[in-house]
Amino acid sequence: MPTKNLVSWNAILGGYAMHGKAEEAIQIFHLLHRIGQKPDLVSFTGRAGKLEEAYSMIKKMPFEPDGCVWGALLSFCRVHNNMTLGEIAAKQLFKLEPTNPGNYILLSNIYASKGKWREVNGVREMMSKIVLRKDPVSDFPGQCVVSFGEATLQMITLSML
Image 1 (cartoon, one colour):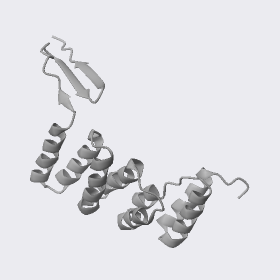
Image 2 (cartoon, one colour):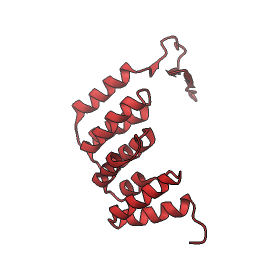
Image 3 (cartoon, one colour):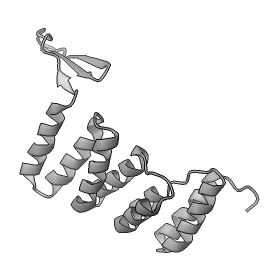
């Protein structure tokens, strides 16, 4: 390989992951980490539907997994309808990113795809307890103001008569 950069290494990692060569992929992952590169191995295994392998790799990481790592796993749990690992990833994300509504929505969608409506409602209740809320002063017809942390989004619906 004439130029060794993160793109080429990620391609190699993806190839190993897609063909079940987890040990080889982990060796390259550790090599890249030692030289200061940050490969996205979890995404490769998740994309291939090998969620248990992805989770195993997360547990073996030589550093603490961040929201990006757990978010990738949760996203692929949604794609592949894996409720068990989705719950594990969501639990970690709720600790790391408690006000990120996307994490709650992904978990809720996993539950909905399994027909777990009680759990869907539980996630909605959790979301109602975080900072995401409708602003009560928006009494203009067709107006909705949503506050999330320090950000505010104002939406106005225009009707054509």
